Length: 292
Image (cartoon, rainbow, N blue to C red; front, side):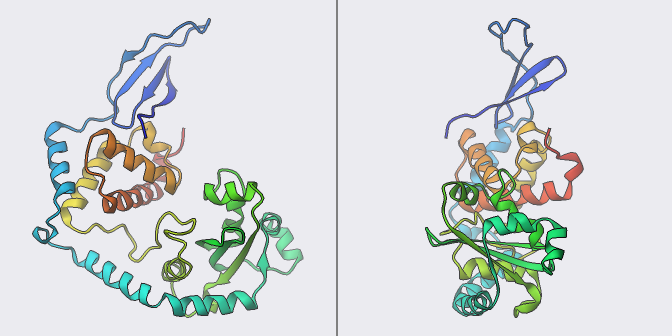
């Protein structure tokens, strides 16, 4: 992945912004002649001392020197338990899927309309949706408070998982199961979704980019990783790049490129967890992180 700039207009200038915070600008000309780029104020700056510290934290392989956080220990313990139980969860969910109606993408697109659902006597509900690509035999699992308002978006351009939509456009056959939370042995949507993702191996073998939520917020293995995340987040949260991180794939690729441009260690734990940090921050600050 090379350097990838984005362009946007602010006042009389067009700005060219890079992931590492570097910015240039030019004034558009009426005759579209060659534009002369000039340096602009950086979107943000990571100092040499900050980079040195980040590099040390992300490259230190001696994890025994870190104090593992209790929440991270709980998360890893829970992951082990859920992976051991995924066969039982698969049996439970497969049994429910056999009893319940399976939908096609076309039916979901029609049923996004509340009036149409009422005409067919179909109620919306809180639960999960399991998207099965019958050609590739891979899955996507998602959750929603009102599954009909969410599941159809995967088959509409630029509204959800781009890989699902791409295979749908290629003509792959899909069926979708919508499972109410109340019909399962789980009491929380987060728990149901994460267990289902593991049961159907939709991460990493399917469409899911991340596992489900075990805790209510992204959890780093130690406090130093958390401090690095907070430092970087405070630097980048006002940039144009940050405003455009609208889905999981974009957040993951942005974090990867950010580390790559600064020649920082490509720590997978940090990349995945920091992608979730961005997601949580944007969700909590929707008004200030709108897409321009």
